[in-house]
Length: 493
Image (cartoon, rainbow, N blue to C red):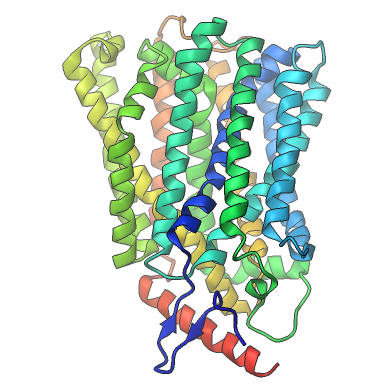
């Protein structure tokens, strides 16, 4: 007899979708508390390496690039771990908790217990590698949660909304804490600042791991990991190669996701944020404050994106709102170029009409990105189901592992791009500080990294999605075929 959480069909041949309760969606979405806490903390790795371990700016970029490549390689390898783990406490809960514990240990060592004690590059690299292993285990497992919980095309975008809200709110809240509380308290980027930031992030992540494990517990059962065939097949390397070669929607998603990720990670590097907020605008806290004002409007955008996805499908949501991202970003670049030509970009923080324009641009930027992210989150679950239909196996770690491998290999150069770029404008031994004088080099390099790279990524997304056939109508057919295959497998047992 099929579990109530498994996909089935009713007597009329209509699909009875697997659905989760709303409170379960909220709790599972809180895995973003973990991911975004560590994401914000690792964004300070440039400063940790320089301040805590005495590593020069250019060398920091090379080291972080190496660790990112290592991160990419571990993803498909840990897919085998995902496939093997089956305990009475479940599969995904064990993997999530294991990854979280490894990350907590590594960052506490990296930012607090070992940092500033006279250790050099070797210790920093070792601790970062340990962090990468934990993050890979956590992230690879986390990417499979939403496909496990629900396959309802109307509910999946809502899962994306909840996840996106946390993805948006957590970094803003942490930036507020970092730049309006910790920085004034400790007098800038120093060891005291890094230690305090580390403890705050690990504390928030602890709440996230507990809530996520509670929310996913009902679905973390062996029957929900069965495939569309009776025989349980072991995972092989050729399964991953087959996915990469023959899963066209995944190929399109890789091109889209990797190009967007490298742009996002470059822009999120703390040195770029310092040049933008501290040097160009002249107030490190102003950008974070303005983004905070936009929390509610951005959340409303997320619901708009989810409603649009439920009606038109996740692929069309990604395409439509990517166009909107391009329009708003071009307008933002023109706004700052106009101010720079006038010789006073600091007026954004002091002249009310200019601040209002910046607020509007910020709201539109965050809102359109929110809609794209909502579509992307649900689209990964669609791709996992597409692979289940195509290959007859339910090994979500294969899809997430292959995606992460390519995605991280491409985006591994983000830290190197950021540090090399600032080195080109004079920062070869030290990091940019908010009190530095604005030069033409700083302005144009910041514009290129903050806004130019995302534009390139969005153009690649539009090109890739032209060849992806996973429209809303096709996903309905995919779910019907999965239901038929699973029903046949159960009847033959």
